Image 1 (tube, rainbow, N blue to C red):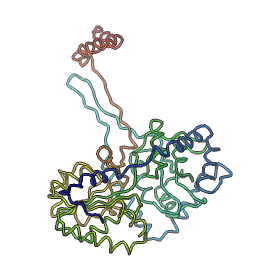
Image 2: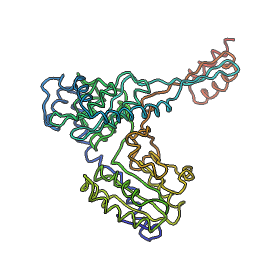
Image 3: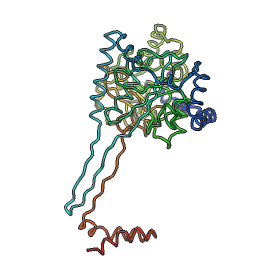
Image 4: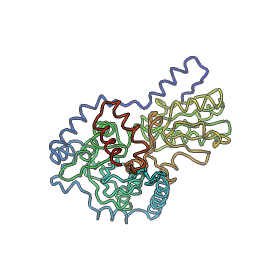
Length: 431
């Protein structure tokens, strides 16, 4: 892996390049995606089936073929290895328990004069979840999207997943059965986002779309935002690690590779205060690469988007990592909890050497759908909040209006809104 020193004259340029890691050529595909969305918006299922034939290499003859049979989901669930089934149930229970703790509550507060103020929390009616599919199996992504929607109280959940050559992964189907999802459609990419955003004869229009995907999915979500809500515009996976001299090089090396094996565009960045550790980790990464099933992908990721930074001290290391604002941040130091207050920007924070990032991907409980490319500076992980909306509650008493109405009318008058002003004054005169 490339090793940079914060004291080098060239460091600023190298570091700025790392900060650009999440750039996606959304502009380059916008015209293509926009055309696909327009077709679905105007032609519905006709366009949707044509796009499936073009991109997924099978042609639905009937609209009903788009919907996955619940019997197929049940069979897939029964056919998976019992130990894997138990593991999925464990993940479900832990994810559900964590997200239940995140649920905000409706509240009301009564003032001394009888005025009531508060907030009503309500779930959206229908959520659309995009789950990558095809030959790859992402049951964890399904759980991470479905469960917070269920905990939030969403009544109708729609899932779209691609089916190249009309084939679906059995493990994904099993997870759908586990989650009691009944509306699962064989459609992927920008086509799926358009179908859920605008609705077709078969796929209902939703209120919010969540879930990861490639650049076409990300671009489609960006373009339909406003027609529906979305969770975030997510890019390639990434990991940042803060480590001192107490960290084990084998732990750090394999954790860096745990993200590199996702995608050639993934980024893995270690910042440490120990030069000797930096060199050991670099050597260990090379040793581990040859053992990986996805060595070619991981190697390209590490060579093109991986880096080890040697910082002058931990304060500088933390400052640099806050600038990076990684999707996943591991803190592997003598006392990681001491550093927590100084960490400002990260999608998920993994504290201590016994907390590798993959534990958060599957069974820890917190959501693994996280902001990438530095967007952790202003985005949060997927949660129940993405499936909720909040309404303000105001109930003025007569005394309450008497106490603050004159000031309200004055501000309205100053803004030249005479109906606003009179709406208040007519009540003040009615004693």
